[in-house]
Image (cartoon, rainbow, N blue to C red):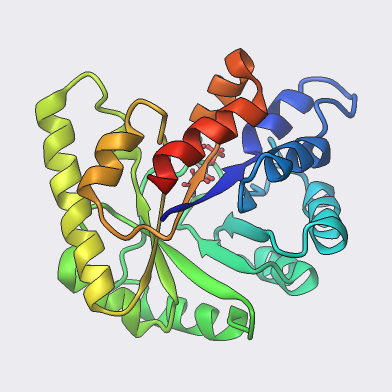
Length: 247
Ligand SMILES: CC(=O)[C@@H](O)[C@H](O)COP(=O)(O)O
Ligand SMILES: NCC(=O)COP(=O)(O)O
């Protein structure tokens, strides 16, 4: 069974269009958690284009006080500021992503070989009892990439599913992307790493993903789920994504 963590970046981005507090990021977190999501994800970028630093503290208080079973997953590049934020907020999961501050969205995983010393020291710094560290991972990282990821001391990798999600109109390419993802997932399991997945997953592309890529512990989904929620509401969107993820 794959757990659903709802990424709230898109809700924050909509809120930020005006100097007004709605839609409320905390309010929407309550809605998705009440609807059965197992946790929430945020990716506070340095320019605060969507999630603001204050959102991270507000969500942390909500989860601590009202949803103690829920998981808070914070994604980001491990800058000094990011590391300091993690130490203050103490989320259950940290996902390290090799993003440049100017990047429009996450579009690749780590080069685990080139960044091995850096990642090893960051993982050592951030790992705590009750907190797992996940590393954003290219779909074709394969056995070599995964063994370098494992060597950092991380608990999980998160498969970057953007290339698969982006080829919804090209079945042959989608099949090749799924084959690469399945190989990397199998390598992660063989190495004893947990497995997350995310980026551009949708109700349309999730069933084939779930059929091809076995043993995904958690999917973090935001853009597609929020688009669906505009049509069907967040509770129904969460219900539909859980239905696919939970099989
Ligand atoms: C790490 C990752 O996969 C991303 O999906 C990220 O959370 C999305 O970021 P944006 O919402 O800023 O595009
Ligand atoms: N880690 C991926 C994530 O949180 C959500 O990505 P997306 O569904 O907004 O593309």
